[in-house]
View 1 (cartoon, rainbow, N blue to C red):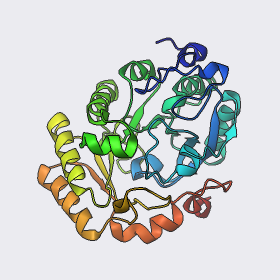
View 2 (cartoon, helix red, strand yellow):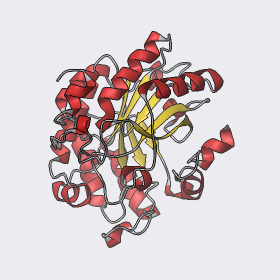
View 3 (cartoon, one colour):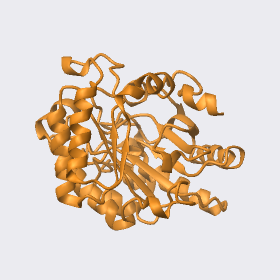
View 4 (cartoon, rainbow, N blue to C red):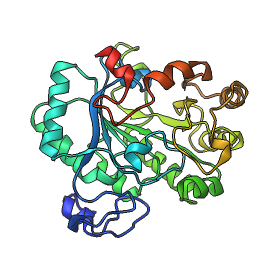
Length: 318
C-alpha cells in the first residue's frame, strides 16, 4: 500500500471493511467520511491513562467518523452524527504546534484515526519537519489491517488499541464485524512487534509519561461480563501477563441502543468479576477505573462535541 493519500482513498482499503469507496472523489466510505479531514476536537486532554495524560495533558485530535460504528458509542456525536470541522493537514499541524508551546503537551494523540491514517502520516511528517518530536500515539479500535499498520511503522511511537470482543457474535451484533477477535489479536501482535509493550518503568522519571510501546484497553459492557472474562483470557494466552492492560468501567448509555442490556452502567459486582479475573491471570500492569468513579468520569469526561471544549475535565485543568 502506497503512502500517497489519493492512492489510499481512490478505492478505500484502509480498514478491514475494505469498502472500496472512491473517497478521493467524494464518495463516503463505511466510516461515513470522504477524503477531507473532519476534526471534532483538538485539545490537551486529561482523561487518558496517567502515562499518556501526564501532568500537562495529551494533545488529542478527535476525528469524525468511525470504521466500527458500535451501537453503544459514547462518542456517537462524532462517530455517527459526524460533528466536526473540515480542516487541512496544515491547519491541524499548526494547532498541535500551538498546543505544544502553550500547554506543553506530552504527546500527539490521534483518536479513532483509522479512516484518516494517510493524513495522520502527513501530519507527523510535517510536525517532525518543524522540530516537534513528541511521541505519537495512535488510539485505535483494534480493528486494523496489517498493511495499514505496516505503513505506520516509524510514525507511531505508542499504540492504544482496544480489544472489545472475544465473542464473535457479539462483535457482529454490536459493531457489525464478526471477525473482530482474530483481526484485533493480529493487529495487537503487529503493534507489539513494532514498539514492544508499554514499559512504564521507561517512562520519564518513572511516574511520568510514556515514550513508546503498546497498552491494550478493554471496555467492560453491562450484561456481557462473560465476553470480558473471555477477552482477558484470550489476551493472556496470546501475549502473556506482561501485557499492560487498562480495564475501563466508564460505559454510559448516552445514545438510544437497541440492546436493553446496554441501557445502564456496569455494577460493582460486574466490575469485581472482571478485575478479579485479571488479577488471577496475573497481569502485571493494570490501569483500573472503578465504577465508584463514575460520578466524576460522567460529569467531567463524558464528552459533548457540540461544545468548543467537549470535556469539562479539560476545561477545569486549562
